[in-house]
Amino acid sequence: RITAQTYLSRSQSSVMSRITILLAAIAQCAALNPAIKLAGKGMALLGPVFTLENKLQAAALGRIGGVDSEDVKQEIADDIKAP
Image (cartoon, rainbow, N blue to C red):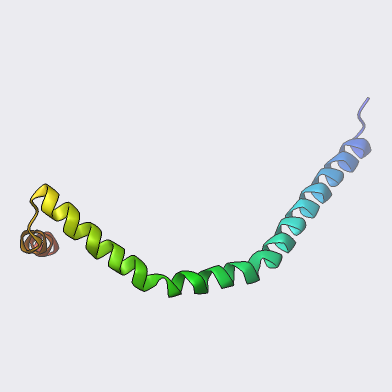
């Protein structure tokens, strides 16, 4: 038989468990933070590589699909002007 006191005790225990899990997750994120910062710096260094890759990919796919860059620029300009 569950009394009000037992119910409250179980409810408080559940809340404490959730708080403990939340605090553990926050602590783990804080520990990973330096790794994330380092990875972010590494990605910034790879920026020029990604830029080159984008240009090469656009050129290759543009030739394959018969897309003219000036047509694309005009289409974008028209889209910007449209309400």
